[in-house]
Amino acid sequence: MDRKGVLLAEIASVSHDFQDRDVIPEHFHPEHQLVFASVGVMTVRTRQGIWVVPPLRAVWIPAQTPHSIMMSGAVSMRTLYFLPALLARLPRKCFVLNVSALLRELILHACGFPKLSKKLRNQKAVIEIIVNQLQAAHAVPLQLPHPTDPRALKIVQALLDDPGEQKTLERLCNDCGASKRTIERLFLLETKMTFGRWRQQLRLLHALRQLASGEKVMAAALDAGYSSTSAFISMFRKQLGTTPTRYFGNGGTGSRVASSS
Image (cartoon, rainbow, N blue to C red; front, side, top):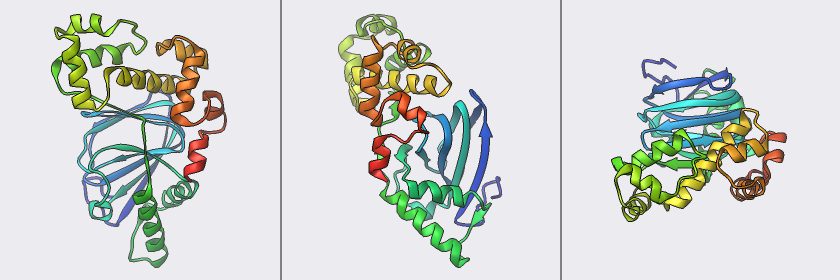
């Protein structure tokens, strides 16, 4: 792919390995992008929010979306770039999706070629199956949308800086100069989550990144602000279909992934 923005085939690929806490600074592409890590956890940040991508998940990033990516643990990143017309039916916003066993093998196979073109019969078949798999993919709740109101954003930034912060919403509202009722309304309106649900999601995603970086379950849970390890494990199981130890012990193949493949 010509990185000046000209994609000379329907799909192009890039493969790269990263170390823990490596960061790809904010940038954007003229093509749609599918970012997959066969190993490690990535955090994709856009101006709309955060998407955490554990193993056997991928993140869809629409064309022209400014984004940065931070690595948690060693990451083997595999990226596919698509001509926008090829996947026009997919959402024009980021989302995390389950990667089935078939889609995983297709991504790894495609990354063996710099470009894939429909002009070549064998590559055309691969392209069509990848497109069908992506169109059938289901989003998973590993995103953390951001409100746009400056008062709510002040609370967001304080909690992003310290996800384990134990201040009540009332105290956080005192710091940002808005009433509790106003902040609750803003979070529900702008993120489609209650403030309590948003904070719970922040803690889960923070713990997920900590685990990927090598933290023990208890340490990750406490650092994220959970009252107990059992409370964290319960939430983790609800969201990812298995326990943290099993999830990271078997490369991320939780039961929900198996059922969706």
